[in-house]
Image (cartoon, rainbow, N blue to C red):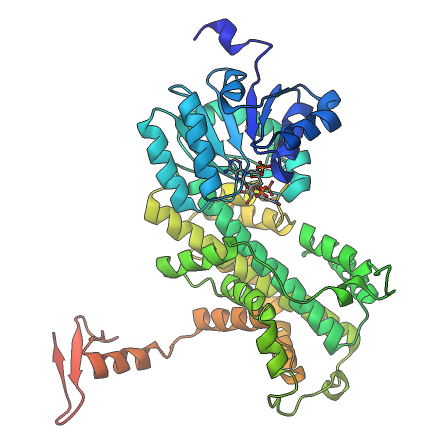
Length: 488
Ligand code: NBP
């Protein structure tokens, strides 16, 4: 490699493969920061469109084949793949690896399952290629104007890639929303949990809406104003902001609030589900994320819902008037229940990241994550500054909930949170994340859990043994006949 190779003005500093929504916007973002960008898409129409629509706005080098594309890159070559996750990504990785040389860097910016990333990195390392699985959050708008980026992979790759990624990432107070997360699959793992937290965050906003709309009987436009108000306080976040906007929209065709004509069946692409499956394997109770994933699944079980509606006994439900509540106080209690449940979901998500990092020896720093999630990504929120401070004060926090600031906040949130869970039950309005998060919180705080009963039952039917609180050792009780306890 010669010096002129690395600084050739006719070569691109970065390449993007896959020019659908994410790839084309990411390519434009790189170009807008003054980089020359090589671009390639399997079918040429997307490449042609990018060049015809935006060719004037930046320096792009379009290619019709992978070989041409690779030849248009500076060494060490750096190419970001933004294609459909799964087999398409494998196909593109192999095409690139065939055309590239030792030391070149392939970056997968798609939503890959982290175990695929671990496998791919090992395969590429055997072929002398560097492979970086990078989670990218922020959707279309983030890709164009500054996403939050979570790259894993080898540290040497980060040294080369870091400045390029920093130049396109979102920036909060001078800090770019990107950092090296850890080796191999660490980046895609944390992006997966980020998305899981996003599921819970969206669901708690939905539950608050449901209570205000069908509990207090407020109109979408009124709730929009309430959310806009909340967005000026502790709950300030992108998701609250866009929900206020959503609730202001009126359907042109029917004149109804748009939210009323949208089918209430939530879709999902898989990252929430992956987060929960992985949490189960790691033994981490991410109940808020789990309930959010199941709530989407239940909403989409349209046949079952239709069969149940009006056909199952609901018991004696109360109306909002029956509860005898003051409207403004109720709104504020719902806000607090949302805040507390959100706090639990984040605490659980960070627990999963800690457990995953320990399991895979990644050394992920939770403070770094809170820092890079403050901008660019879907869960960006003022609240994340508090999480950064929490880890600054104690890097070994056993749970985010135990940080003195959040602990203090919970003191103000707990009573309204309990009230809201009771009201939701009495009104017959489902609030699965509000409710399960409170159960999780009470379980954490409880001096005794019913697990002693479970242990007894396990020992009874399966001689699975138990431990005692008053002496060392493992015990089994002979439960039938002459009951006796034996130390095993
Ligand atoms: P899509 O996920 O819709 O994928 C479309 C792209 O994949 C097109 O460029 C298509 O090429 C290409 N492709 C496929 Br499909 N099969 C291919 C193959 N066998 N070989 C080569 N190329 C192939 O695009 P997207 O929505 O822009 O997302 C890209 C990645 O970013 C995904 O992994 C996604 O999960 C992730 N992501 C998306 C978002 C978002 O908000 N959309 C956010 C964060 C991350 P073609 O034009 O020739 O069919």
